[in-house]
Image (cartoon, rainbow, N blue to C red; front, top):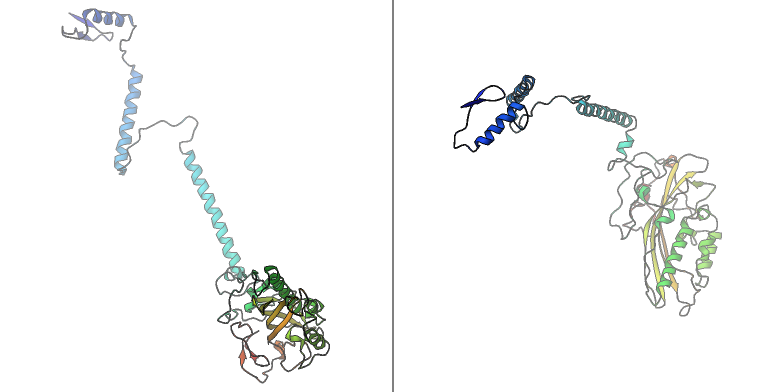
Length: 393
């Protein structure tokens, strides 16, 4: 017996051993004839065409992938374009952004080259050893005695009013009082920590008042410095007062004070460069001694002139603070134990209580006297009373 499927094609009844019973098979035939149930439907001609077209495009994409040699990337099935979307919208955006970025970077590079070409100092001033700069980084504080002289200045040009420390090792030194730092105090010699701190602070004040105070530098009487000294120290205060009033070879105020004749020279700007260190130790029982070793660099101009010169003064000063219960001393006042100086660029033979620098136009091959001296060399000390020829200022 045979039946026909809904498509009209013959189909044999299943054998007796089939898993479908006669009743189930008859029901399937009935549903097919009535068009209901789960009977399979033949796809339409349009569906078969679309399926065939998709299969052909998949095979074409796979073949294209094989031809291009993408060994590690399987070909992707073809897909239709998105609705109202560009197939390469994101790719185009990325390309446009890259083009804009490259253009901006190119402009920056061109501008940088033009700036450096017009002002090469913007680059060379920041290279090691490339020359002086008003913005040179300051040196760290001196914590131990130097063993060598500082390197020569790298700028061959002379100092100017705008750059008075040009070509000088002092360019990177501290400005004024900032270069005078006191060490941490501790009790010594029967003096308490507070008393030692008082001695350090008073010594710093003395150095500032004697070597940095504008009125002192102008040749006026250094009242503030004198007030720090103990009037009970035998002869010292009197000697200093006399040297200021009647300077001479035997009584020279320059042994403690830096002074310039205002009718002859004046400071350039308001900065004096400073470098050195301060230490302390126990003195005789009931006292503390403070040792100060500092170099001061003064930029100067001749009154009414434009030339700039520098005078360098190095001072070694030892002060003491005594316990009034053990010594004849005024509480809180300093005694001067020793005072020494080395001066570069001043007239050696003049003893009028002022420093007298020479300027470039003054140098007409003068007769050289004494040994060559580098006033910036803090590793050596020139004996008091000696007069040499400075190698640089």
